[in-house]
Image (cartoon, rainbow, N blue to C red; front, side):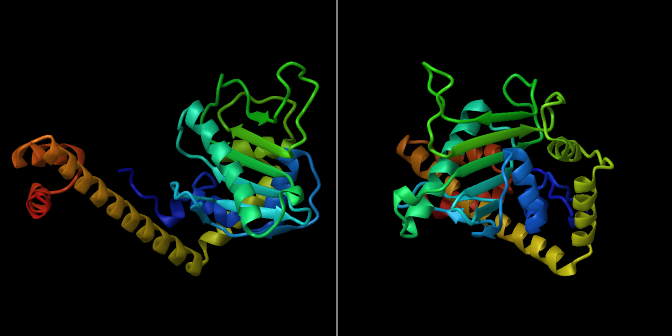
Length: 268
């Protein structure tokens, strides 16, 4: 298990700090505008750290930043620290986008009222061929690339490890540099860096981070315990002995052998 960062060690690439910084509406609004090349009148925070669990009981997803403008366009911004690989990353964008639509319709709106939907991922690792820093995806006709389906959906994947280029907005480029730990004299980045310094002096926010970490630990422990019980059940069906099950679990879970033995004995 990766060592948990202390409050003072957090940077913009940690989803908790990213979320706190994006709670400053003018910062979040400016970043979205620069990435999508649009103008937004006002943003509304639908719910930070929102967990989705839709009607067919799929695995919930936890969102860093989920906002809406006054024209019903909705935006999800995520700091993707883990490299899931191209296939899973693509399916995550699809799931997030479908969740935006489901949430909107579940609130009582009609599908004709659907506004735009943008899923924006920030990745501190290389994407695809590794050559670019910004990859924008829309639904385009395969037979005629000049025709775009007007569904209002856009997915943008940004990589701080891609090659710099002149076709990226200066503030977006500076933000990607900042993800790599580089503080430039860009005014937008100076404001973000000052904001993080100020946030770290807020004892209430630090306490919130510690509480959040404890909740995550509890969730991981609960999930781990469920997986251990499933393993025991499966191996019992395969006629494995207690000794084999204990050995298998001890190789896969960082628990004392006495604790694993007690769990197996209790659930045998």
